[in-house]
Image 1 (cartoon, rainbow, N blue to C red):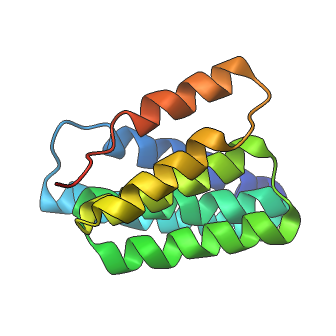
Image 2: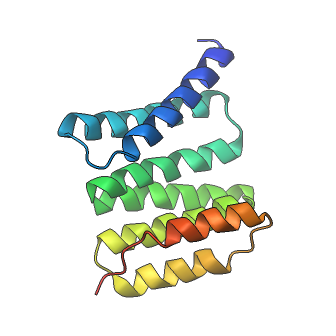
Length: 147
């Protein structure tokens, strides 16, 4: 497959994944499609993307699994994202959203302390652009803090 085709599919599948993630509620079939689409997008980015795309893929997959409330795959993919972010010295936005994803993982697992710790790590990660900071804060506000 040509690089341009991989890139086109990676982008289309990325956008399709978000469309499914934004639904109020999903059928079993839509949930499966969302997970497959997230994995497929990541596959295509691995073929042609920059190192940062290799970090964003597992982040997106973890976010999709969060919606299914399946802690183990969320944690697995978040850890991949964090490892890659550290390895490539990812910029502010990507590192902050990796902590956001880890907070979300611990939230669905009912771990209040780790949820709050990772929210704090996300909040204290310096982010250069104001609009990126606002996007992060809006996402952090959607995390349910366990009792």
